[in-house]
Length: 300
Image 1 (cartoon, rainbow, N blue to C red):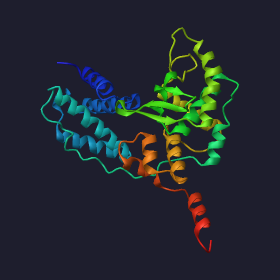
Image 2 (tube, rainbow, N blue to C red; image 1 turned 135 degrees about the horizontal axis):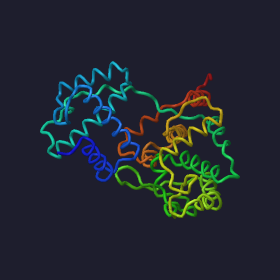
Image 3 (tube, one colour; image 1 turned 60 degrees about the horizontal axis):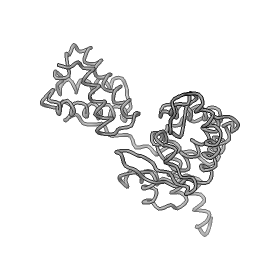
Image 4 (tube, one colour; image 1 turned 135 degrees about the vertical axis):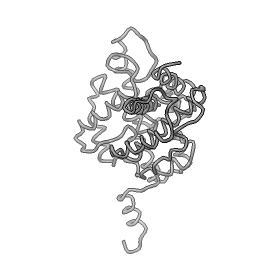
């Protein structure tokens, strides 16, 4: 019989190869499963096959007592449900003890986005005379200019970007591909980075790569590194907000829809399979509401 660690490794390989999950998703699934494994040891439970629905209910109580947010609990249970479904498939156990566990209703929150003034501060932080500054500016402009995910940004190869045609091929979730337009600001930033900064970074290693964005060692940039870069730029711009890795994607969608873009078009640009995923961005800012009111109401 395989060890618990071996079963977890098999599942992570399954997520990566068969499900084509992002490294970010796999990282969180692994943490959630390991947390549950620690719980099993505390309960003196030997092996995943000994997990019962009663034990799952007890685990839900423990998560509640630790005051985890509803969204976090929902993610943990979803990860464990998928893991035990995998164990069912591998004939490790006959039943999925998480199959009947109800997920807490997720708190509905509007996506966080940046206002134009905040974006300007962010775009003026990078030192464009340095390779790292040129790279960071190109990442910012591309993320905001296209609305692509951080994980998609890291997958981009040089050949995927056609600056003459001003388009980029994006490899999204589930091996789905889509083309997105590259705006003038993003194009200018990428051209500067390719002509100068990237060449300097590539000299740091003997391992040649076609990845568009490189770290300071000349290796392909990871999604975690991009998140660290965004957090550092936020800090340097003196903005007092905490942003998620998706904030520029949220900002892209919000600004597009606020300016009258078609919902279906934004759905295609974002790579959403369902229109309902895009509809969350149809909130409007107070400034936009005021603008509409002033422009349309007779007594404004």
